Image (tube, rainbow, N blue to C red; front, side, top):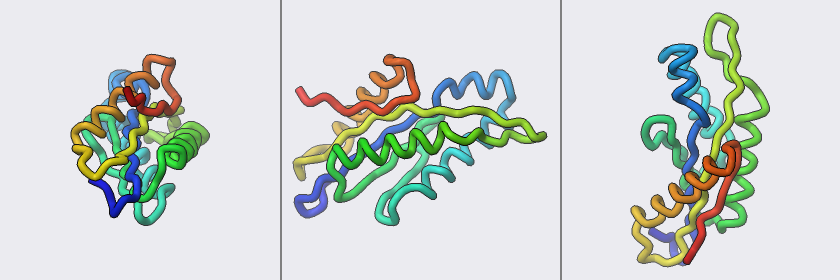
Length: 141
């Protein structure tokens, strides 16, 4: 899972308090938020990066040829872009949306994708536990 010795980084991100969006504003509004979140991710990554929905309100951004430091910077930039302008949710309503993210980097060619996703997920969990609307890095033991 490594491109010719180049690091590959993963940003696993989660829309903060997404359940509340569905509960308070309804599933149609939730779907709008998911679509807009995905669009903002796609439009603000490099051409060689890949952003996709990972399940529920989680998205993953795969960043080839990207060190952990650069991935953290990219994650922080995306976090700010998401937070700075409200999401339209129909009938002229707008909603402030934030995201939390976890970054992990594949350094060894034999790193399993499951292991890297687990490390990114652990970092994401720490970001959410620390108050949300932040990006955390994996911790390597």
